[in-house]
Amino acid sequence: MDKQVFEALSAATLPEKLGGNTVLREKIGPDFSRWSVKEVGDGNLNLVFIVSGDRGAAIVKQALPYVRLVGESWPLPLKRSYFEYHALKRQAARDPGLVPEIYFFDESQALIVMEFLTPHVILRRALIDGRQLPKIGRDLGLFVARTLFRGSDLSMATREKKTDLALFADNIELCDITENLVFSDPYFEAELNRHTTPQLDPIVAELRADRDLKVEAQRLKHLFSAKAETLCHGDLHIGSVMVTDDETRVIDPEFAFYGPISFDVGMLLANFWMSYFSQSGHENAPSARDGMRTYLLDTVEVIWETFRTEFAHLWRTERNGILYQASLFEARNDPFGAEQALDIVIDEIWREMLGFAGVEMHRRILGLAHNADFETIVDPDRRAACETRALKLGRHLAVNRHHIHSLKDIRALAERLQKETSA
Image 1 (cartoon, rainbow, N blue to C red):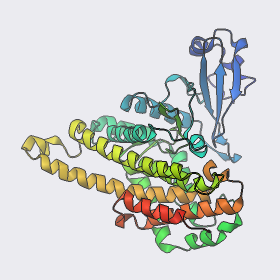
Image 2 (image 1 turned 90 degrees about the vertical axis):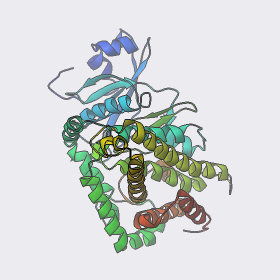
Image 3 (image 1 turned 45 degrees about the vertical axis):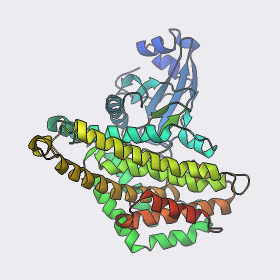
């Protein structure tokens, strides 16, 4: 391909344009005329193709110079593929085996060639279908603990971390999307907002008139924009995870930025809570998915407990950065000081995580980009009931995060909301 002029690929043009790529020829087959190309991208931003041939298959992902969901009226820089590539490389080093292998990166054409994951499916699709996957709680809890701890000043040398911080600080436009679409737009009549049924109008008006909620959303936005603790995935939801019964892989970190440790954890757990409330929209008879609902709440607890346990383990074994140095505690025969500091750090992550989860639940129902969990519920009354329950839990998490002490309390509220018979 021409290394100077960007050209968006299509299923028809990809074989000829990439047929000379040595890596692709080795992975797929030397005769590009025999390649089969299928476009599978259903996201908001990018082109994604499965390319298969005599030797195997690969994924080709290419950024577009605009938001695909909206069109050319909303331009975006192609450089976001550069940040995705670098985030994947770092995540692969920090938790090996949990992200796809990268085969090739072309910055000028904004494309990444990577491992084709099969027979994996998108986790969101699996949960909509009612599948109970046995490993995702532990896998995702370990992933967030390892990538977030090892990408922070708790672990990295200060020069390495600050160099990385400068690199990812240039991911301006995608951070701007999050700052507006997550923390601000859902709470007023923004142009790009939408909710799918007028049955939600009363609660939408209530939330947008809620002063306490709007203040908390802006406090969380302040944390997002100012607390550059670690390299975050930036868009970690159940649509960014691919699974089989035995394997979990995390994909699509193009929103990667340096932010709060709590951000990825909160966004991830929010999506399990939303899946919980969506289940009644997908069941064929009342209580048919009670087991699935229990599984989802159990998975939330597994993710958090695994995260907390692994984070504490890394604190005790890999705390080699500039924060809470061992030279102040363990080396002075004061291991209890380090444990006291750990408790404070975990408590801070907990309270921030709850807030980020709350606003994520709101933006996925009231903002631009929605979840298939709710969108695929055909009956508008059932969909509104599911979404209303999620909105109520989201408000509680965001506003009352400093007074919530356990997942047991959140579970009890979620189960109580689920028993409501009307929106």
